[in-house]
Every structure is written in structure tokens, then in C-alpha cells.
Length: 323
Image (cartoon, rainbow, N blue to C red; front, side, top):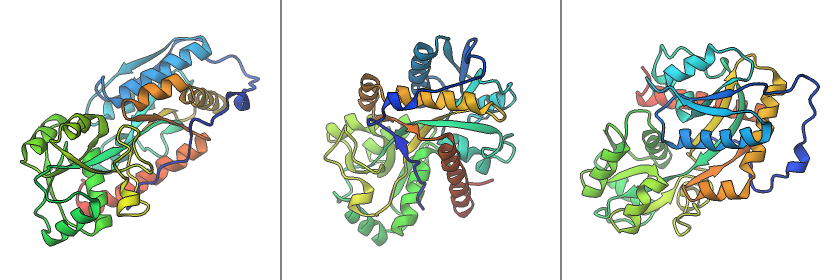
């Protein structure tokens, strides 16, 4: 299965082409809060802060990021869902937003109906890394080995339904292999055990695994994006090395409560596109393995989210991840 990635606006974006023309009262007229529904410090948080800073400069009002973590991002998501739809309380999201309702029946929100999609904000590749004890150096060789040892090669994740788990399941289904899923209570212990040889592979954030790859403690076989990572250009994509069309990345995005005026949604989307095109900002985040992007239209991001929800729900049912 492929979790499709929306078309995006990147470096060729031209600010002059998007000058908005609004007849309604000026927006924003007061402070705007962006709710981060997971713990502070991760990609979702730092990406939201990057955009908040740019929005404040462009629109002349303060944009603040407020973390409200808890229960697989449900606490913060519900908070924004019940907030007034005036454009003053927004929600920063990742893949978790689209996946949680398939795994937790009482999530309390419908990802396809309860919010107005503004724009994707970033796209981050994962890297397929193995312990060097595995005698393979390419994805094709790994698939061949896994077919000889069905259910024996262990795959570390930070929990059922996590980004790494979903990528491994998606890869396994495309490759026609079976891996042994080992769950950890977070990325750090999973990487420690991978380096130590207690598990054999992981789909991980590039920046987390990169120091271990450079030290020779882990071997990178491929990245999950549609193009090579600028941090490791020598490492091929899964698409080019073994499974054509394979793309499974971590996205971030921005939403507003359902009913938010379309003009405000569009204003925020335009400012997202402006911010994503700032060369210095793009370079800063590329160095962290994060590509800043923007959806061409809010409808495009809406369709992307709907597709992600439907495809993950199917995967969750077929793999037993759903409740």
C-alpha cells in the first residue's frame, strides 16, 4: 500500500503570484494560537513554531504555539475542534491526526469532517536502517533474505501505529515479506537496541539515525521519500532501489475548526506558501531532515487527508492495529 503524498509548492514558489485581495475586515485582529497536541520539542512543534514566526512577521499579530499533549494527540485535537471557528485557534497536525480514529474508537473527532484543512507544512523522510550484522547492503538483498526467513527478522518501532511501525508494515506488504514487530516505549530505546543488535531493523527519522550511520553502527539501505535526502545523497530511495512508487513519509500540516471562513483559510494557506518559500528557513529545516512545503490549495490538502485516513483505516483493519 502507498500512502500518497499531496502535490506541494516548493522552492519555485513566486510570492508575487499570490497577492491576496480581501473585502472582509482585516485578519487577524488579535493573537492567534496554534495548538500542538503532542509533547513540545518534536518535529510537529518546531515546524509549527517556524510558521508561527513567519505568520507574525507577515500579518502583524502575535502567533503563539501552545502544547496540549495527551492520549495520542486527542486532548489538543478535541480542544481545537470545540473552539470558535474564527481563525484564532488552529491545530498543528501530523500523520497521527489521520490515524488515531482508526485505532481508538472514542477519539472524539472525525478527521474528514471536523476541521477545515489549511495546508501541509512539512514532509519528512524516514530512513530504512539495519544492524550491520545482517549480511545485506541493498533493499533487494534484504527482501530476498526476509523471504528466506519469514517472521524471523525483528523490526523495532515506538509503538503500534507509530510512524516507524506503519512504514514497516507498508513496506512488508509491498515486498511480500513478514517481519517480527517489536514495540518499544519510544524511539530512543528502539534505536539503542537496534545499535546493540537486539533487533535488526527500523524505519527511523533521518536525523536520529544519521550519527549512528556515520559511525558505522547502523547501515542505511534506503529512504522512504520520493527523492533522496540531502543529508545522505548516497542512499537511494525505496522507490528507485526495489519497490517503484513506494513513498511513506511523515507530514505536518495546519487545520482550523470546521466552519472557519474560507477567506481566512485561504489567507493562512497563502502565508504558509510564502513561509515555505523563504530560502533561509528552508535551508535551516533541510539541515534537520525536514522539507518545508505548502499545498497548492486547501482542497488539495483536504483530499490528501481523506486519502490518508481511508488507506490507513484499511491497513489498520488488515494488520490488527484497529480496536
